[in-house]
Length: 122
Image (tube, helix red, strand yellow):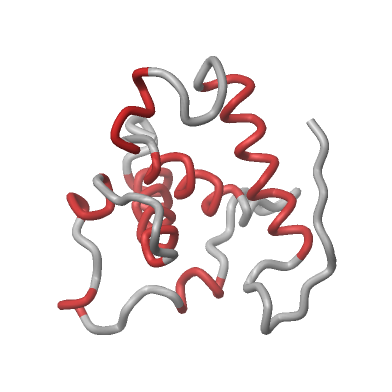
């Protein structure tokens, strides 16, 4: 695979270049090892049922470090609502579809929870 990007200002993206690379590299690894075939094609992707997993997993691993495992990124945590009534439920997260950026943060939170508290499920 080839990775193309451009330098962005903090106003244009919440990602650092390193985080963006890790996010997109996770998608590469998902396509190469987890889900055979082309992205978005096949039974597994019907009705966007993998959306929460693909993006949440990429958001989670964007916080990978060389020496400290995976560290939750502050920019993602800030994206979670402080109002409990506005937060995504697990069900809403699992049935998220493209069209909004909010689900990325909640999909990350679910992946982070599973990694931290239910690793055998992760």
